[in-house]
Structures are given as structure tokens and as C-alpha cells.
Length: 361
Image (cartoon, rainbow, N blue to C red; front, side, top):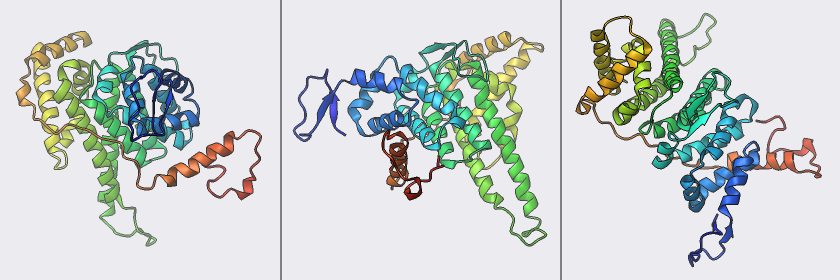
């Protein structure tokens, strides 16, 4: 998909003879305004994925909130959207988070009064913290409703890409990160208990094989490890920018105890355990009955005092969106379903449609 900005006066490369021009500013503005429709989100995905000129232009914009906020609204109202629209919105976020400049800049954009976010009144929050909140909410929704591994994977990949650049996390965003880990921990314990019970008998009383809890356990442990890696990445790369995350860690420090000696998590727990132990000892020295403000003050002082060389370095978390091997299996039915639903004045016989189901998401 080759075209360039009308405001760019450089000549077309001779290798792209059929390229055309379009006003990128007008295109960007229109896409920002139209994200409530599947068609606009699908077009945005296609442009970001296949046109490097558009991707570079959009990532250089200083008003990225105009594009990101509508995408976050799609994910926030996940129960009202079809699954294809949600996938497209999530993949757009994943593509954007591949860029370090984007991951830094979203924490510099301060938003006021996000009216569509109903769980909590957000009078002032950075775009980065809001993005984290919405992605975590999507993960939690998916855990309790759809249980779609593809959705999980892309949500976690986006968080992982951002984690090294977390800056001045809103206290609620920090709490939700740890709350998600708490939810995963409870789920892990439940599945572990079920797996243990199933080992006492390979067959149930009516000779029906029991569920494969070992596979469930493996999946939940993969997600837990990813969350630990995200927390660790933030602590290792931007601890001094995130006292609220340290506060949330200390408040729920008992959650992490069971994973300290677990063979699947021992290595990644080293830094988290070090941070918890270091700051907890400073709080104990300060005495009991500390206010929230005093605890945060002690944490900020401790961040300066903590020797950074004691934190073990891990490979940078970086995930890149790669289209499926046979993307047509997803896109062809999706595109034709949009053609069917939006083709005004054209009649399509419902009983003859075989490419997609009429009640399909």
C-alpha cells in the first residue's frame, strides 16, 4: 500500500511507479473521528501495518491522544463490540507500543475527566496510565468471560512493550497491576488444587476422564510469569519514576511469597523480592502508624538510596506484531460481513450467505 503525504515534496522512488498522494493530516483527523466504526479501525490497522510512511507520520504526531483514546474506548466497551473490532483495536495498540518514543510520550500527556471510564472517577491521569488500566481491564474481562488466549497474548505483549518506559504511574494504575497479579495468583491456586485432587483418581465416578488441569496450570503459569516480567521490567528500568508501584507492591507483598521459591519464577522474583525487602525494612525503621503520604516519602527517599547494581539485568521485553500465516481466514469473512452490513440499497439473500454466519461476532 504505497502512497505518501501531499505535503512531502520529495520524488517517488522509481521502484514504486504506481504510488499516489494523500493529505496525511486530513486522513489522520478523519481516522480519529471515525473509530467507532469497524471499517475505520480496520483501515487504521491496515495503514499502520502496511504503510511505513503513515506509521512514521502518526507516531510523530504530538496529539496522539486523539487517536489512542477512541481505540481505548473500543476496548473499554468490549462487551458491546464484536470480537473482530476488539482484535483490531488491540493489534493497533500493540503496533504502536513497538515504538519506544510512543511509550515515553504517552506518559507526558495528561488527561482530565475521562467520563467514559466508570469504575473510578479519573479527574487527572496520564494517557499511559489510562492505557494500562484499559488493557488490564480487557485481560480481566477475558479471564472471566471469553477466555481467548489470543486476546491475552496481545494484551500482555502491549503491557510488556511499555513496561520499561512506565513513568509516574497513577496510583490506581499501579494498584490494578498488582490486583491483576492477585487475581492470577488466586486462579493459579485454584487450578493447582484441582490438579492435585485429579491425581487421586484418573477417572471420575462415571468413568468420564477428568479435565486436563496440567494444561490449564501451564497456561496460567505462563501468564503469571509474563506479569512478573512486566513488573520486574518496570522496577529495573524506571524504579525512580514509579513510587506508586513500589507502594502497591509493599501493600500486597504477601502475594509474592509463594512464588519466591517456585522453580518457574525464582529467577524473575529476585529483583521483586529485593525491592520488597529493601523498602519494607526502611518502613519498619520508620515505625508504625505511618500515613500514606509518609510511606510515599520514605519510598522516594529509598529509591535514591537503593544501589541499582543490585538489581539483576534481564533481556528487554519486546514483542512485535506478526500477522498470522493465513490472515485471509480472519479477514475475508470479516470484510464481507462489513460489506453485507453496510451496503445500503443492496439486497443480499441471508440464506445464501456461507462465508460468515449472520449472528457471528
